[in-house]
Length: 365
Image 1 (cartoon, rainbow, N blue to C red):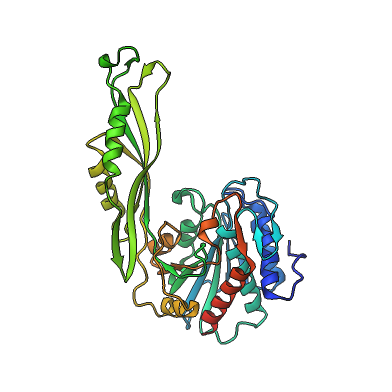
Image 2 (cartoon, rainbow, N blue to C red):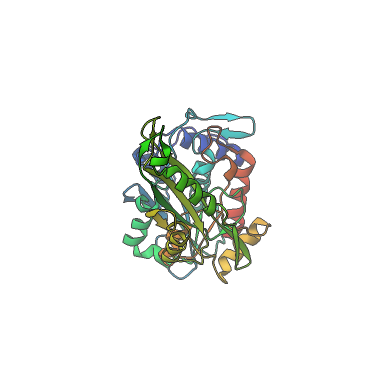
């Protein structure tokens, strides 16, 4: 179904209305069918060449490299679970609601750019532009719809640069950190809490191990002039079966955000070296990061269009999936990362308009 709500002629207002329209379509991860249908309708109504690529994916505009440089704009359609923040609302100078920052505001910018291109309003681009929209990004990377899409659509892998509209407050953030999660199990011996000397409290082992791990200092690694900070921490700790039983086991989750210069295997071995003297490590997921583009003229051109220096991405994002497919990629989107996943998630009208202006300046050079 195509949009019937977008009536504003002012760009900022139109982008805000488009964002609100997208927010009001439920699209928690794994339930993107309705928003996929809506976006397809919007693009088809605007005469944008578009293909339902299946598995909650949409490919619009160019889908392969030809004579000109080939740029992909990419965004995910799904959100984290609602926190009483849908439907959304427009409040003064910003839009509030689920996914406003991460990343329905970015999707709104993509749609307006695609519609403008189909209407002949993006002349002199000098590049061919493709638009990728996909689901399940907010789940573990092994469940993302993007990597399978890149695997089955060979033409997309010829892109010279992919730009993921993750929330970056309109600053280019090349590359991203790797992300490893592991269960850390500490073993002791159960016993009665009245006679603790007859038991071996697993909590003691956990406390000692976690304290030592947290002595590992954040490590700054400079890559292509950008300072990525490698960090490790425990995020959960569970122990005990009853108030009068000394626990035989305690389990923690360890999260390691590692330098994009490390491979997944190197990151795992580093974590095991830190943790295994105290307990057993079981890796749950391990998604390597992505190095920043190197000597990529399009990336430099995008940074110039923002008028601000690039910053490292202190997180994992789908640029890593593009990197794994052989495509250099950066993050740039209108959302403020400070508001991502919050109950009061929001995005300003000005940020939406600024992102549109950056992309238009970049594409039209």
